[in-house]
Image (cartoon, rainbow, N blue to C red; front, side):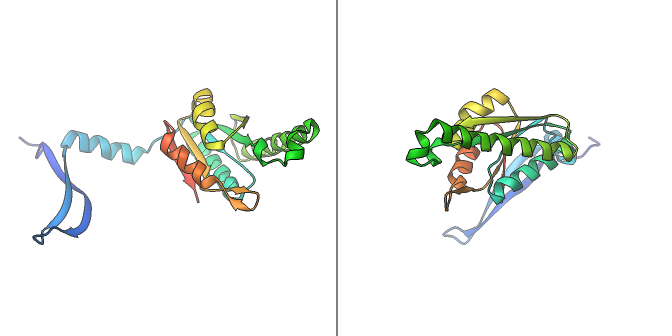
Length: 187
C-alpha cells in the first residue's frame, strides 16, 4: 500500500450555523490524493496569463487597473491590450450632433490610449496593443472586445466616473458575470 490513503477529506467551508438539533453545518468534499497533488502543484506554479486585456478610463481605479495589468503582464511575460470605451452618450446633445466635437472627444480618448501604451512600454512590456471601442462598456467588452482580442484575463476598475456619479461598478459586475475568462476587479 505504501503511499498512504487514496483519498482525502477536506473541509471547504464552515457555515458557522447550527441546525435545529444543535449540530454544526460543515461543507465537506472528498478529493482523490492524485487530484489533491495536482491542485497543490497548480497553486505552487500559479496561473500564467498569455494575453491580458485592461479596460481603462481616466478615473483613479481605471488607472489602478492599468498599473495592475502592467504588473501582471510583466510578471507573466504576457501581451497587454489596453482598451478604452468611447461613450457618445456622455456628450451633451449639442456635442453629440456636432461632428467636430465628437471627433475631438474621440481624439482625446486616442491620445489617452497612446499615453497608456507608452507607460506600459516604459515599464518593461514589449507587446502592447491599444483599442478603442464604442458603446456601453460592459456589453462592448464582453460581446465585442473579448471575442476579437481573445485574452485569457481581463482587468477592470471596480467603478469609474461618469460625470459626477460613480459608474463602472455595474459595468465591472457585468463583465465579471459574463466574461468567459478570468476577471480581476481592482479597488
